[in-house]
Structures are given as C-alpha cells and as structure tokens.
Amino acid sequence: MAEAGGVKDVLESVAPASSVPDIATNAVLGESATMPEGTPQCGGYDFNNGVDYRAMFGQYKYHGFQATSLGKAIDEVKRMRAWRLSDEEIKENEDEDFKDPEVRANTKAKVFFGYTSNQISCGTRETIRYLCQHKMVDVVVTTAGGIEEDIMKCLAPTYMGDFALRGKDLRLKGINRIGNLLVPNNNYCLFEDWMNPILHAMMDEQENDGVVWTPSKMIARLGKEINDESSVYYWCWKNNIPVFCPAITDGSVGDMLYFFSYKRQGFVLDIARDIRLMNDEAVNAKASGMIILGGGLVKHHICNANLMRNGANFAVFINTGQEFDGSDSGAKPDEAISWGKIRIDAQPVKIYADASLVFPILVAETFAREIEAAAAAEEATEG
Image (cartoon, rainbow, N blue to C red; front, side):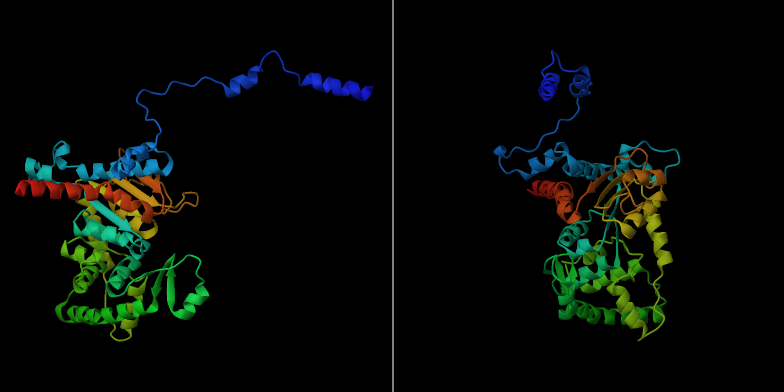
C-alpha cells in the first residue's frame, strides 16, 4: 500500500495545473520591443521570378550571414567608385589646382588593391587582370608568388588537382600542389630560363647606366618583357599602375636572385625607395579605398600606408581569418580604425569567405557593370 500511495502522490504532482507558471510564461512569451521603422526584413531571392543573377545578388543584403556581408561590400565598392572630390567642401588650404570645379568632379578615390599569391594561382587571376586592364584600381600590392605565378601562367599552364593528393607521391613526380591546383616543376624551370636574360640586362643597366632598381620597377619591367595580354603585370605596366611587393624575395623570384648572385654579384633592389613611393600614394590621395583579398603582408602594407593619411575612406576585406589570436590577418576593420588605418566615419565591410568564391561576384556587381555602362554610353554617343 505504501508503494501504491507513493505512485498516486507522484501522479497527482504532475497533474495539469489551473494555469501555466508565471516564470515560464515570462521567460518564453515575454513581449518584444517595437522594431524601429524602416528596419530591413530578412528574405531571399524567389526563383519563381526566373534566373536573374543581378536581382539575386541585389537581394543578398537581406539574405543574412555572409551573403549580407557580400551585399554590403557591393554597396561599399559602389560608394568607393562613385566618390568625387566635388562631393566635399573646398578646404581653406586647398591647392589652387583642386579648386577648379571640373578638376574636382574628375578626381576620384584612389583604390588600393591587395591580394595574396593564391588568388593568382587560381582563376581569380583573370578577374584581377580584368581590373588592371581597365584601370579600375590605382595601386596594387601582392606577394612574390603573386608576381611569379602570373608570369609562369604565360609560359605554361597550372592544372586542376585535388586537396587529397599525397605530397609524397607528388614530390616523387616533380609536381607541386597549391590546394587543389598542380604546378609541375618544369614551370619553374621555364620561369628561370625566361628570367635569367632579364636579370642580366637589369644588372647591365645598373652597372652601366646607374639605374636604381626597386621591386616595383622590377615588376614593371617583367610586365613589359612578358608582353602577354593574359598577364596581370603586362596591364599594370601598360596602364602605369604601380605594383608593390616588399617581400619580393620570398618565392621563386627570390630563388632566381639567389642563383643569379652566383653568376654576377652586386645586384640591388632598393625597398626603401618603394616604401616612400607607396606611402606617398596614400598621402597624396584626396580619398582612398582599400580592397584586400587575404591577410598577412598585403593587408598590413596597404593599411599601414593609409595610416599616413589618417585612414582610408572606404574598405572591403575578404578573408577567412579570425581575430582571437591577435593577428592582423584576422583583425576586423574596427581594429584598423583604432590604429587610424580606416577613417572613424567609414563604413568598412569584412566578408568571411574564400575570395575565389565571392570576389568575382563582387566585381561582376560593381566594376564590371560600371565598365559595361560606360561602353554602352560611348556606343550610344557614337551612334
């Protein structure tokens, strides 16, 4: 009987009460504050309207997560490209040249564009080349790999592979893996054969004509010598876009310089002259924007140059870095604001994503549409 009574007591204790406990009601069904008027609502693209990529990407801002970051980055690049000095009031100490209304209306924000070498290794290279071909960027910063792999692709192809291919097997075959891309050692041999005569010519000019070589001047020379319209640096040379690479020796170019030093000693690359040129690009800009793919050296070099002008006006970062380890690679734009590398009143955007995935979309929705619109306007005028 004691056991039966105990069960009865338990059943009665869980029997429905006359009302839900207040603590549960307040916790689950508490009233919300009214959302401010005009707050954007979340929603994706409706494919019942057809396959319309422009409309789909236009909806990204309201999609949520990193799609929203991409949508905001598209807006930020549009603001960067639309800025004109005529948008600003004339300062008391303004140079006379920049007081002219026409000059002000034609003065744009200077675009600093940086990327790590893997973006040249992959198909993003063609997107980068497109921007330089059409003079959509003003200053380029990259790593040594970002230089040499562009040149090597003019000499021999990079192949598709797989992330899972074994390093030991590839090493024995003389094939190098970059993620899921494959670069045969022969490509580097072709690069050395192409590079050596140029190094000898540059050394002759140093010794006979007193030419002072800098990494940026050397890269321009390589762009001229490759003479290939598929090359990023051919177009940078042709369009007078300076390319800065403070770590030019950290890659195959450095290997070539090392081997060359055993043939002819004394070749000099003046990096001090390049830092003056790089920082002056920022200091002399009326407004500046930064678009940076990846982290490390390219990100810091561009940001630090813009510190010299108290920060960039516009910024878009695309990388997968996190900030918990304190690295600059993973730092959010807000950290750059604390250093004066981005203006306090800027609206910078960081997209946490593989740049090879999202950067072509960013270009398609900004620079490419601008180029298309200009071509259409020119065609209409001529017609």
